Length: 159
Picture (tube, rainbow, N blue to C red):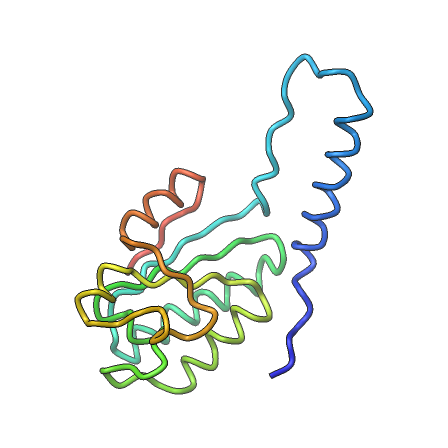
């Protein structure tokens, strides 16, 4: 599978970081520290905790609508636990629409959407990292990942 170019926001963030680093070394210490670049202005974290195709379709459609509206000005993370985790597995133990897995791969590769699997749920099912799709990240506790993202300014969306 060919890799897609990184979204424009990644390039712009890297350029801004490099410029900020060069500017910091060339200037005297500022009176007030510059705030860190927290990425795009819009941040959203979705909860995915059901396996029913209609539910997953609704979540994916919402993500698609947000991407359409904000393009590169949004950071999206999807945290899956409980029955929702099957969408992120190579060989789900519950029926998952192949089209939904194609959509999440495309969202990850083309738009930088991050998909996180709950390690606690994986442990309960008996899954390891190798059981998950290659682009999926794992956090020990999915609910804690959501909390930490909220602390970083992410809006929490659950259905």
